[in-house]
Image (cartoon, rainbow, N blue to C red):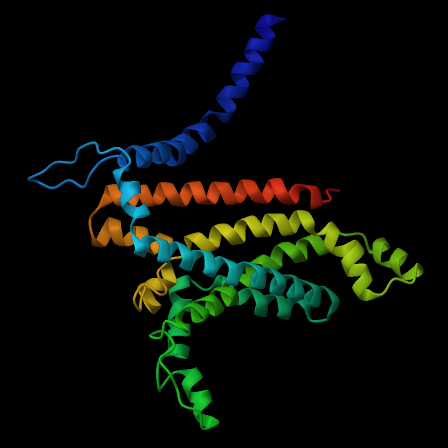
Length: 292
């Protein structure tokens, strides 16, 4: 009996070995390597890198630019995640209840299929001063244009608008799949009980969509902290770091300043922050999730 159990255990480990190897090589090892790298100083041919402990983290804790970038990312997440999720749910409900569903799905999902660089170039045309679409529309009403991406007061809302447009269609697919998996008997039973549309949505439909909402929320928060492509085209973090986000800040330290240990320290901060956010979402929202 023990030999049979040992053989089954060995077979199981051999089956998962390829996945474990890939996960360790491309996830766990880079994380450990990044943590170790963050404990060293920036090296050069004259002065090689040496161990400095937590000095990189202390330097960022005292750096006002770091806190500004972190605040920008928090504002960006708070401005894009709820709106993207709400818009995705509305679009899914609209597609589910209307005819011509294939055309609507394609229209809503089309922004998601565009590469981020292509989408950023499209929106760059919208925001270009004087000749951009927004300024042209304002000009038809006799209103003056403005430098949308060059003004600290408008640059972040402009980035949020583009991100919401890009991501809402992607999240809609998950809500639409959840809606299509629900039994039509729920709606019929609610109608027999005299339940209105709003009451049905609030009491029946939305609670049953909570597992999907939790999944979408986790992905939306992760996306809000790892979007960087559009910054290369639109703002490069400007003006005066008004649109600089954490991942672009990491890129600057790694490839513009050639300070890999500092970039590693920022990466560790990003990973810890995302881990805390993801765990918190599951802990605080798990009681509100109604699994079927």
